[in-house]
Amino acid sequence: MNEPLYQALNDQMNFEFLSSQVYLAKAAYCSAESLDGFANFFIVQAEEERFHAMKIYKFLNARGKRVTFKGMPDPNNEYSSVLDAFEQGYAHEQEVTRRIYHLSDLALNDREHATIHFLKWFIDEQVEEEAMFDGLIQKLKRIDKDSNAFFMLDAELAKRTFVPPAE
Ligand code: MG
Image (cartoon, rainbow, N blue to C red; front, side):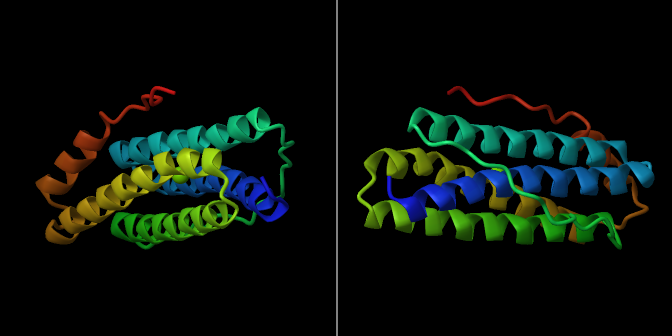
């Protein structure tokens, strides 16, 4: 594994930890609005991001590379609505996808087949992440925020649990 690829993977591990904080900030906003189901959705999302970060941590260790931790910028804590929190989440996932594609380009140029294979899991994961956010945004756009449907969606998202994918 060449140096630029190693540094980019290390950066992505740090970015996944930042993503975890980004989603906890959204959870805290929802909790403050007494929307515990939406808060639960974002707490589970934060757990997923931590899992993604640890997946890269373990991969770099397995490849004999030492990971290094970096300071994080503040996540945004201000939202005008739940829809706004989801739209910012969707934009964040699109940025993650861009980063994973860039990592894949570096791995392909380096002919680093172990990393190319490793990143395939993340490429598939990003398709799901973007589809999930897009789907919830479409729903939220159709329902009024004081309607029964809104509180039913909150109740539905209260059921989301973090299940670590099989390694
Ligand atoms: Mg992620």
